[in-house]
Length: 96
Image 1 (cartoon, rainbow, N blue to C red):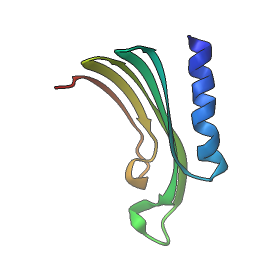
Image 2 (spheres, one colour; image 1 turned 90 degrees about the horizontal axis):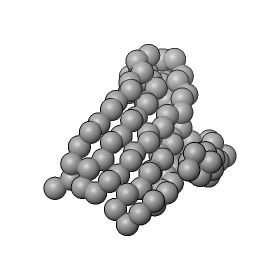
Image 3 (cartoon, rainbow, N blue to C red; image 1 turned 90 degrees about the vertical axis):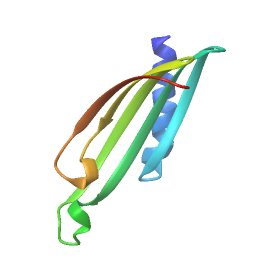
Image 4 (cartoon, rainbow, N blue to C red; image 1 turned 120 degrees about the vertical axis):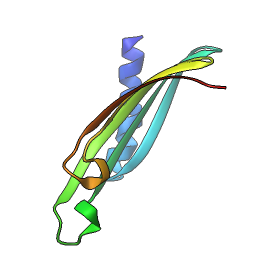
């Protein structure tokens, strides 16, 4: 299974970085009610949209395990709103 997740990461990341930015998503369905989803993104911009602010470029990712009706997600977002802050979130939830 880890080989399939590594391949999914590569499949999702190549178009994002080849295009110089954006986002991509790949899902690996395990059963009818369970799947892994990998989202990767690349962003660039200046802090506070200031033309003289520091240019920030970064890549981030989230991994989600869906097991209907619940899901667990881990998300890493560097340079939140193009500030110097990094954010890692963990979500445990239920769809209704």
